[in-house]
Length: 343
Image 1 (cartoon, rainbow, N blue to C red):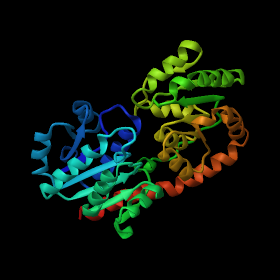
Image 2 (image 1 turned 180 degrees about the horizontal axis):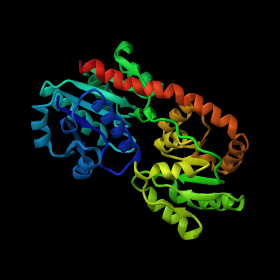
Image 3 (image 1 turned 90 degrees about the vertical axis):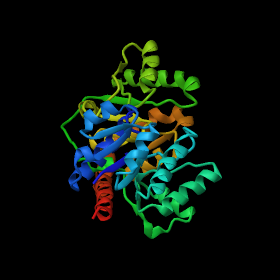
Image 4 (image 1 turned 135 degrees about the vertical axis):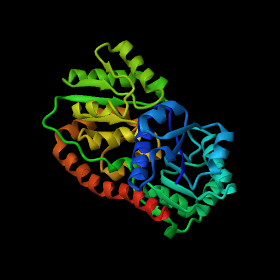
């Protein structure tokens, strides 16, 4: 069975690469051979080597059209593919591929999707129309479920799961040193708030914390280096990968992250997670994990919040560990959905 996979792959974004790893594990567990998993990637050679799959350039429409002629299934997802806030081109690209599959009479599965925001009325209607015609679909949070219900997608056709990355086991270790991991991603207020972030890093260091900047996606590393110019003691890691991230997260005692999967991995590696809410998906994952988060316009209160988390670490850890048990069950429902449609 040949399966075409579409997502934000090959862009050196740790979260999306982790989703692809989970999806490939699902398909392999269901008996699909690696060479029959065809991933659309921005860096096909790298994706093929890393995941032991076939990979195609994501914008090569001729190859995609030919592959759809031989494919038995198109999987679209997971992650935040269908939104029009960070890019106006995302929805037309991903749903354009879905339309090509429908033309080729290839069934479509929407996998582990996190939906919205979608501001355009036309694009909202297109999203709803695509999901209604899909063979099966799973979403990673209740907000995405409500989004689809609002577009008229029948509730019985939507599988409420969890982010596929939650399939990973919790990794615990003994006592850790006072090390804060900080992740920031590009956002509109960065230039005006850069000084606030520098003051925050210096304050943590004065409070005897080691602070390390962890880049998890495009643009993060450059932000860390900007802070390092004014704070030479700040350690800035190279862009984290699936191979290197475990060592970094397992050494941290607390992680402050803008990126959704930074929060997921910090919880999975038992590094106290604290969210920075730049997008509704961050608030959603913080609610799922039962962890605190701060709005970017309330950074003056962040230090007091971090102090509270640090002082009450055992209670915070108990809550997210309990949440992880349910989220792992939810993540495995993505695989169960695939098993049903691939019988």
